[in-house]
Length: 400
Image (cartoon, rainbow, N blue to C red; front, side, top):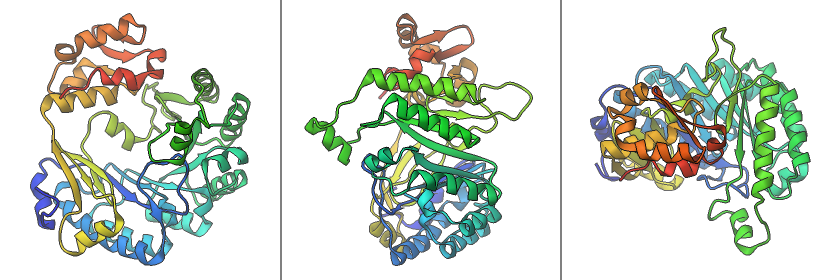
């Protein structure tokens, strides 16, 4: 299948129904200085055109999606920028197709773009999880990142989400930001934890190419401090544990409401867990990626072109890449090691039809010798220190 394939041809790539769906909403009020995700300024006309195109792309995946999927995730960009009227059109169409609601239905929101009316509308339509892009609770750091919201806007938005009935809220935070001291990070954690959210996603800043912060790094005007970043990460783990969060992935912490202890708490982000455990997923919208039954694909990263393709009854694909069994298994192994539970040999065999020990035993032993991995008769996982270097460890498992 090529990027010029007709809309009706997408169903040919489906086998067993896919239960997870990602939708990329590309609009932002302003591009943050660290962000490398595809986004662009919002206009009412382009947003309306995007929603019309997106509903057409939804039509193409219906044969391959399990009715009322397990997870539905609207990311961005800033999905909460869409006005209620366009959300209504989008959700009505998704419902008619059986793509909504979902067991876990997440919408990413920016504190500066939320109103009580919009929050109530989303909750009434079946959205049951919100991911709030906080990043920092220090106004100076927010300004350094190019964020458009203030510290107070975070508290105000969190309150209105609770008023709207949301009882599963994630807070996105960042550390390792230029100008961010350990004291500032400690205060941000303290303030964020007072909100008593159900989930925390705390990411170390990455200097992505083609971003203002990367250019500052290349010019030497900012310098990463690995020791400080490590201290911030350790403080995060300590503070989160003290407040009842369970770390289940390098950067993700969730509460567990069940009575039976679990390494994957019941308020973990199920959509992301599906990525890390090698599950299939459809991706809709400009720049969205998908992995469906051995075929990895990506849509064009251009909203105008995305809309034009769909208006011409063509798929908006930019690339497709069929993966060999071994290459895909290597990716699954690498992503799965981001989780604290690592891989049991039995689960990995079920997911990939390969034995982790047959192809990666030497790599696992190397990590054990470095104090980064833990290997026993049941499976393999990274140690707490190994999780800090998970990206480097993951590279060992990739195969061509």
